[in-house]
Amino acid sequence: MAANYTSTSDPKFLRTLESWLKGRCEILVLIRYSHAAGSKDFEFFASFQSLLERIRELPPRSSMTAFREAQLPIRGVVDDELISKCVKSIPDDAEYLVVETVRRVHGRRSWFHDYAGISKSELRDDLEESRGVPVAVGLYPTWLDDSENVVSAIVPDEHRAAK
Image (cartoon, rainbow, N blue to C red; front, side):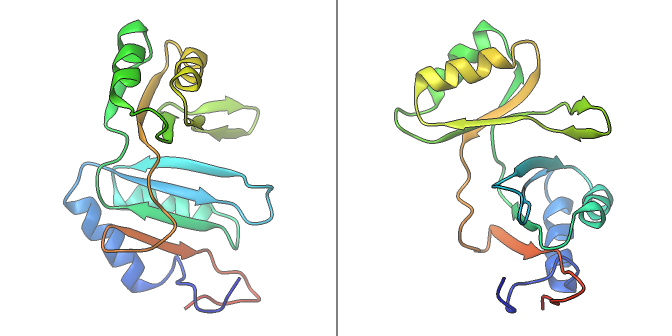
C-alpha cells in the first residue's frame, strides 16, 4: 500500500462522510479487505455514528469507498414483480449489483450478501437466490477513482500511517 492513501481517521475524510449523510437518507460503502482473496462487502449507512462504529471494527489496511449519490435504486422484497422490474431496468451487458439489505448470520459472522454480474440470466438467477429477502439493485457503482461523489480511504495499521 502506498503511503499517500487517505486514512479513515483523516478529519477531512470523516467530515466529508458526515456532510454527505446530513444531506441524504443513506450512503453506500464498499469495503475491501486486505489480504483476503478479494473479499469485500457493500453496506448502507443511514447515520454517521453507525458508519464510525463500522470503521472502528474494520481490520487494518481495509479499503473503504463511499458513494455520495444514491446507489442501487430498485428496492424491495424479491418476488416475480421485482425480478421483472430489475430485468427491464438493467441494460443488456451492463454490470449490475444486488445487495441484500438484511444481514445474514452464520455463527459469529454476519454480512450483507451481494451478487454481481453482466447478463440478464445471471441477474434472474441471482435474484432467485434471494427470493423473499429485501434487496437493493442497480448498476455496479464506479469506484476506482475518487471524485466529488466518491471518496476512498484505508484503515491505518501500526506500521503504515495513512495521511
